[in-house]
Length: 196
Image 1: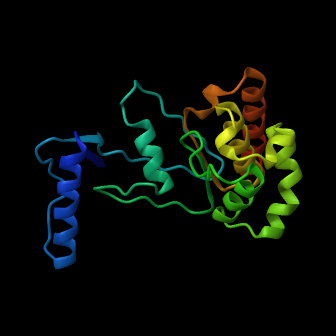
Image 2: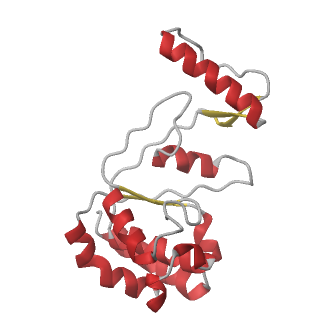
């Protein structure tokens, strides 16, 4: 479960109070909502085995992206725990994980190392990443100059070619052209076949 505050001021106030209580060793009940708080995700429980795939469907604001951020470790749950075994690759928000000032090439190396690969392993996969992303000479341009489609292409190419044990994907493929989206689905089928 994960809760949020309706405004930044309340969120910061509660965050400071909770931090102070934690530092002083004072227990507090995180299962209760305080004024101006709401549950973004509440009592979600599931288990996936190697080779299985899960899709989340729901209306806007239902908590799908929040759940993916919890699974990726970007935010901590207020209740419960998450156990994941293996390397995690994630495409959750457009351009998330990219340093906009660095080139695409530099971001490939950074993201590969975040996934636990050595520089040599990234070098071995680099040409496949570049070929899959289809961004050509722009690989040496700063990512801040990329279109949204180019960011998605590069992000997916990195995640797919590094073959993480767990791949989390949000709506980012919605900005790609139909040919690239189909290419991504085909790649996901290949990745799934290797996990059985």
